[in-house]
Every structure is written in C-alpha cells, then in structure tokens.
Length: 485
RNA sequence: GGCCCUAUCGUCUAGUGGUUAGGACAUUGCCCUUUCACGGCAGUAACAGGGGUUCAAAUCCCCUUAGGGUCACCA
Image (cartoon, rainbow, N blue to C red; front, side):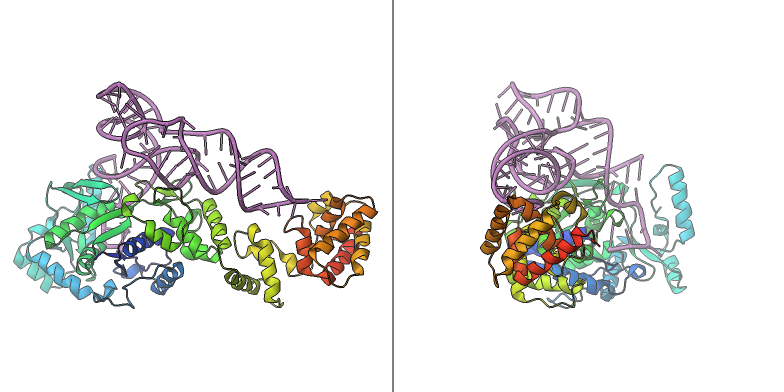
C-alpha cells in the first residue's frame, strides 16, 4: 500500500511550489490507490504563524486536493501534528543516545560561533568538532543534573559513502565528511526537521517521500538516521524547483507566490492545478489541458523532469481561459453574480436570463470571470463616457444624422429581433446612400461606449429595444455636442 | 568557496544512437469577422561550448561554462 505525505510547516500561506508538491503527492497516491496524508511540521515554535494551519487546509481543499489522513482525519497514525508527538521523538532519541549514534552537546552559542569563524577563516567548511562526544558519562550526568542547556547531535561517521536512490535523479552519492553533526533535538526539547521527518515517515509507514529539491542535500542525514534506527528506507523523489522568469528561485519579490494570491486574482483552481502539474511533468504526449482525474490517470513519478521550471504566467492565463470555457453555464452564472456583487453594480438587479445572454456573448472574449464585468460594463449600465480613440476613428460628421434615421426606423416597432435590427440598419444605410459600416460603428459606440465586443446586433438584442433607443438618443446628444464626460 | 543537482525554441516541454529536432504558450502574418475576441492556416525561433566513443550523437562518456540547491538550536 502506497502511503505519501505532504508535510508543510505552518509559517503562513501555501506557496505555489508547495501546491505542486502537494499535487504530485496527491496524484501519485490516487494513481496507486494509496493514501495521501497531510502532516503538519510545526517543530519551530519561533516561526509558528497563527491561523496558518487553517489557511493551509482550506487552500488545499479549495484546490481539490483532499487528504485521506490528517489532523482532523485520523487513519490510525495520529497525531499528525509534530508538536503533539514530542514524547515519541524523545523516546527515539534515547535509542540513538543509547548506542552512541547521537550524543549530548552542551556547547554554548559563543563557542559554536567562534569555532565557525575560525573554520571559515581557514577556508574550511563550518562543522561541529565533536567536542562533546568526548564527554564521559559522569560529566554528562553532572551537566544534566545541573540543568545545563543541551542539544542532541547526530554522530556522523567519518568518510563513509552514502548512496541513495531517487526516482527523479537516479543514484545520488554523498560522502559523510560533508555532513555536519546535525542537531536532532533542540534545547527547547523540540526535534529538528531531520529527526522528526524520519521518525514520522517511518511510524506513519510512508513508502515514498516526494518533496522539493531543496531537501536533496540533507537526504544523506536522513539516510544515516534510517540506518541507525535500522529502519527500511523509503523511496525518494526530489522534485525540481520552480523559478522566477530570471531563473532565480520563485520568490515573493518577483510576483505572487501564494496560492491565495492567484485565487484572489480570479484564477480557477482547475487552471492553476493543471498548470502547476505541467511544471515538471508530462505524460509524454501533446496533451496540455487536464481535468484532475485525467491527470491522476496519466501521472507517474518516472516522468517527472530533472530540471527546474520557470513559472510562466502567460500559459496559466491561457489555461484559465480554456477551463473557463469548459465550465457549465450555470456555474458561470453563479460566478458572474459573485463578480457583480463585488462590482459597482452590486445594487442593481439583473435576471438570470439576461446574465445568461451576456455570458453567451462574452465567453469567447474573456479569460477571467471578472472580465465579464470589467470588459462589458455596458451591459450593466449606460456608458458614462465614450472611448475617445473610437470616436476619433468611427464618429463621422454624418454619424449623428444616420443614427437619428436609424432611430426613426426602429421607433415604430415595439419588439425587435437581431434580424430586424440588422435589416433596419441596412435599409437606413441604403436610403441615405451610406455604407453599413458608417452606421454600424457609431451604433456600437452609442450602445457600448467602446470599439470592441460582441456583434453589435447581439448587443442590441441583449439590451432590448427601449434601451437601444435610449442609448442612441443620449449618444447623439453627448458625442455631437462634445459632452463626452 | 565545498558538496550536490541541472542544461532542447523567449517559456513549458517531446525526444532514450539514424527525426526535415515535434507540440503548447507567447510572438508575427494571413483567413474568418462590417468591431473585439474565439477559431483556422502559415511563419520566426532551440539541442550552452569543447573534446571523445561510434559508420552514425540532442541522445553515451569526459572537461569547461552557466544556472540552481545546500552548507542554522528554519523547515
């Protein structure tokens, strides 16, 4: 049974890279009919952020990545929060202490600092000098009894090759000499990541450790721990990193890195998940558009890329438009209503029928739901100004006169179809020996205030006869008299 | 700096010894459209460099270069 975990630390928002790590864990678990676990790595009390866990969970839920086991979903391996497992780490550190695979260290910060300075002055890699390893049992007992603060360090063996297998990268080899005697237990009694993650992964029966590449160089420490505990080593898969457009590590400095940022900007979860899934993985075919279940089906860790990937928002935007167009019309209706509530039109009431027509007309023209409102305000109110560029280009000396004639033509009718709007226009143009375009463009401007959008007769039908007549009158007055704005 | 990882169009990628090096986003042009999009068609655009191995190298090996990660009582 495959068991994988996403193990974030609750230091704030969910990073976009974290979303991808969670996604790959999720995809792999679902593909293998395994279990996807959410474990909270909150062993750093200084960095704990209030509300971060709740935020993490709700963001994961929003993305559709439901976990099978977690802090509120016990699968028999609780607790899933490391701060609640301190006794477990305590017990295991004693095992290590017992067979000298780890040792107490009572060194003060000052000594450590000067040691480090000395080493780097000599051009050496800063490393603990195993000073406290030489302490006798009685010295240790004394220190403990005198309540001298201590940490517990990993007793890294000298010059030992450490080789492990990684699904993404193959065999990776390190020499133990480059490893420091890592602190496993901090002086506050909390474990460090290295201890906690190994103990928990073993106890929670994690089969595959899927995490970011930033963990690759500390993996040998973890291997050492598995060996010291005499535990089976899980299979590792270190994911390539996500980069800014200048190829530096994806960071807040250069745009949005929090999933919530993208959510707030109106990105669809389907698009974000689709996009992020493709950043570092392909099925090997040309498929770019994925629903979540399709991605589960196609996913494999073997096809994860080795090289890091630049987060290109252009492609995300395209995918967002693609996913938007695949949405059921009633979903779009609800989303439009939400956008309307957030807009300056939130006091106005529109019928579902009216909104549905707008969606139908605008869908090929938008990439985001908020664009139903922002790029087509004329459906929700009379234009309060007319685009100057378009006036310059399309409003001729005879425009007002032609529109007036057109108005007369449709004035007589009491209801009207797209065809009738169009025929009336053709007839008006003909009778005044003008081109259709001479009327169409001013009409569009009068109705919408802008130069682009759905077909002008479609707009007219959606707005309705009375509104069309009204807007023509107002436009003639405002534009002809230079009262724009 | 030590160690580790990586290297195909601007970007995401396909490619596992023999391909006109393919696709997608972006970009350019054309068509459709009396507008703007969508859509369709076409175009520009890549194997980091140098050595090997081989009849044959984007593909295997080595070196160089470049980028990234990591070297905490952070994860």
